[in-house]
Length: 469
Image 1 (cartoon, one colour):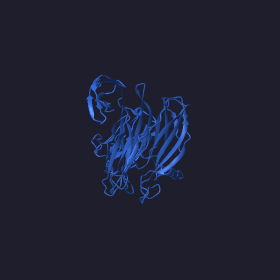
Image 2 (cartoon, rainbow, N blue to C red):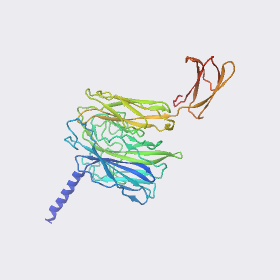
Image 3 (cartoon, rainbow, N blue to C red):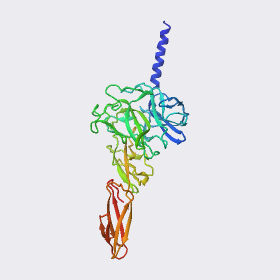
Image 4 (cartoon, rainbow, N blue to C red):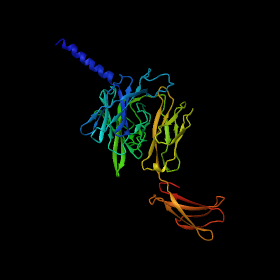
């Protein structure tokens, strides 16, 4: 028995060392792109705490959601980079390469897999590794890390997941309003829509991790007005289910929590909204003091556009710190749109996203993009990310019928290209060679007298959406 006791203490010591040194996984997400013929390109992104050990090369698992069949894809690491967010000109660099207290590395693996051999429609792609950080204070400390994504491989055309264009929030400032968007963007599947919700973190497939105290998946952090999440901003805690905007004011310094946002992709099939894919972003958040810096604020309004006509969303920023310079960028969330800005030595950077949508872009589902505003504070720049949207409505069209009568009179009428333009109204006008209006009418069918010489006939159509042509 005397020989057993030292060995027992050694085993406990090794276990404690393993747990303390291996709690390094801060977050992850899985995305995929359909290549056709059952082929999918997978991307696994993992966020590592640079205060912990290196990530091990743990394989991913692919299997049917129900039934048998599984695949282990061949994944290749393509990049590793520091995403702590410290400016390159700051004298102190992150824990990944310097002496700052915090450091986050982004590791990305990619691989192509053939799902044709799986005899099912819903496929689960998953990854796991031990362990989550020991300093998580709201539950989940030292727990195994597990995340997944779901693919409906039976839909036609095949589906690609949205991509996250913003690194996950990791370090946020106590007492400051936090407005953030993960920038989920789906530019490959035209017509699909996204919805967002907060869900519980997992330690294994089907095994949730309980929050402690009054925290929960919907209230995972201490905020102004806690635990009443429904209070008006800046109090309360909310995730916009349509835009993915997350907003609250953290109130407890050094609190560490886990937050998981689930993104569901929808497609209308035979008139029925159908889930074609699900992705999760699991992220760890640390509330830290930011005594010398305020986060920039972003202002602007989403817009409604008409097909064939340019629309611009103009954004402005402001920073409460006199000496800060703010720069803005966007995530290229709308193909063919352009972005201009006045980035320079100003704390009120601004810009515009301009777009001329085509008729094929008409949709009841808004097109979304994100704007990021970032100041130049050291060691950690203040940053805000906010989403905006453009909803595209159809411009009315018609064929004009104009018949010359006697004495300079012209009979006018038109045939709309569609019979269901919402709230369609019309105005006729006739202009002479000097561009002066010489006649007008609000009747659909009328007779107008024109002047000798060259006359120009105009028909203006308006809908209640509103669009004018």
